[in-house]
Image (cartoon, rainbow, N blue to C red):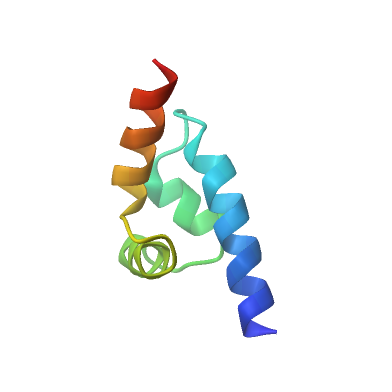
Amino acid sequence: FAQVLQNLRNELAIQYLGDERLSITDIAFLLGYSEHSSFSSAFKQQMGMSPRDYRKGRTETSS
C-alpha cells in the first residue's frame, strides 16, 4: 500500500508542478505532507531531483 500511495503522490506531484500558480509548499500540503521539506525529500528520493529543479527543467523544455 505504501508504494501505491507513493506512486500516486509522484504522479500528482508531476501534474501539480506543471501549474506555476501552485507553490511547492501548496503542492506538499495537497499531497498530504505536513511540511515542505518532507515532500521535497520524498520527491527527490523517487525522482532524482528536487521539485524545484524538476519544475525548472520542465519550464525550460517547454519554452
